[in-house]
Image: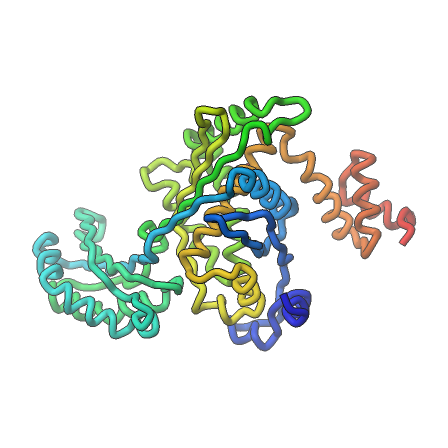
Length: 401
Ligand code: MEV
């Protein structure tokens, strides 16, 4: 990384002028730490992973986890073609199957019309590629035919192109069916754009001073099954996964609300909210993990190129496609989940967390420079990690800087 790029990151990544070009009514900027997770080997390639996050311990835990997976060759990942789904809500139809047949018969025309809006995405080999249908009969507002436009977004997230295509084809859809179009908008349940990652951690690498590795493997598997079976646990389990994924999504200027919506909708796809990961043991007792979730990420368009820090993040990753970015994010999610389960199933998370929490309290109490570590350490030594104690230490002249 060049000195100028480091300078951009240290300055917060975004000038006031750039902020004003991104959204409306800007009165300032809001910075978060931009950190780098290390030790990631994915499909035999090493990555430095940019993460933007305010929560202590996440980056360290993720890097530690990646190191253990690296011992067995790192993560193996995969992804679907970048297919997004756009929805058109069609109402006031007398005969849903007949309307579907009429639209099927004119599919080529509809796709051709949609692709007049695909712009640079079509030039890169993407665009509208097909139609799908969902019938929802007997709703409180009558029968509905939902037309799904399948759209290959290539290296973009694709929201703008798809929404333009949907608005453009809606009048044609009405003419063909005699129905009335209401909504025309992409679906954030991007389950045609899945990313997967899996990896192995040796049981012997999991042994602690007090617990053999095989027992830690069992405890992690038990924790994983808990999340598979119980939505109350699954929500927290998946939140931990998203600690890692969102940090990469944010660093690369992507839409983390879209990614969150997709992940949780997918986790509830069978009508029962469950875990995004699976953990099991192999014949020699080592721990295997796998994650699968929709990841609609772009490396062109939106803030990915407009935000200077996002541009730097993408350069740091050295990735070639949106699919590769989704696969890196999936690997980070799996690493993060492993780190959380390992901590929870052994020492608990508060042990490491309180040290970082103490630093945050010291900062909140007004500590600056070297004072932060001194105040935090003192509170840890005393076992008294509270804002009032941090303030008292600073006011009482405890610090030597
Ligand atoms: C905290 O941000 C995330 C965890 O709660 C995740 C989990 O419980 O698996 C530690």
